[in-house]
Image 1 (cartoon, protein in one colour):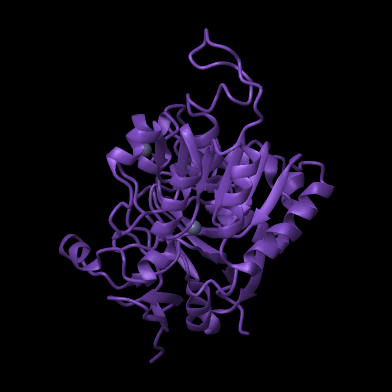
Image 2: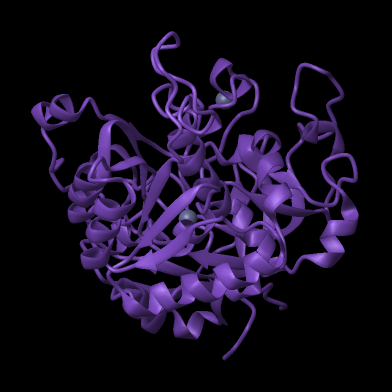
Length: 404
Ligand SMILES: [Zn+2]
Ligand SMILES: [Zn+2]
């Protein structure tokens, strides 16, 4: 008698409460809904926000009440190839996302870290990360993507088809490596989002244009000063034009920021005034550059560190704006309403609507492979999580098919 061997997928699994990940065989994901796609994963990122799960900050015990189990596959950033599609993917109607009619097995896709249906009011407004059906990859609600295969729910509203010539210039697909395209899944759009939130705030908008606030006052000629706190991968991607102070307590990250900035300068997209500094240095620079007024806006892109929020408040000017894209976990908020009142500070929190920001991210995408520190196999997973958690390494990418 011939026994058919069941096909499995190898995955990096998280075991609560904290600091316990294991590489295991899991059942091959199956189509369970007509809107699903199964994707063979080429590369999967290790992201700073995954550390909230790893450190046990995600209130796993509470989640277990609502979901069938808290042991789940890690990760939320991937690029891969469609291998199977649900029955909805032959529907031709203008009312539905175009991928229902266009996506084929064999297409190369990149995926935002939360799913989105693409048709609800929230998605149509562009706020895809808060879709009413949204689920986060790498959580008890939805298996993560540090695996060989993944089931993508609401696949037509979630996936971006890199093989579709109508979606973006295919010539770019040949020029940009998979490891750089993977940055589209989270950190490049999230960096852009942090910058857009700060720049588009009604209090900050008039400053670059040297317009007064309110509109009939006297115009200010100040060049706006921005601080970016946290020079992990998202911090690199948040670099925006104007006077910028990039801040991180870790020297190796500061050195990497300087070297990447040097490369960007050669591409002609550099800032006029840009410095990379330690926490001690930044306070003196803000004092000198702004005559003690403070920064027009501060971008906080640090994972799970309340002292970054406190520093952001210290650096921001009255009527300034603070933009934070970190998923603040269990830590109590370190600022009070009274402190925000005292400076008339505006504070924008929140998850990036990655799917909506793809077109803008494409414009900035180049083959900056230096943003990726290492591409490793799953056999290095335990070591890489521990090293990344200590801040001793930058962006790590897993190749689930590689044996290192
Ligand atoms: Zn991420
Ligand atoms: Zn939706």
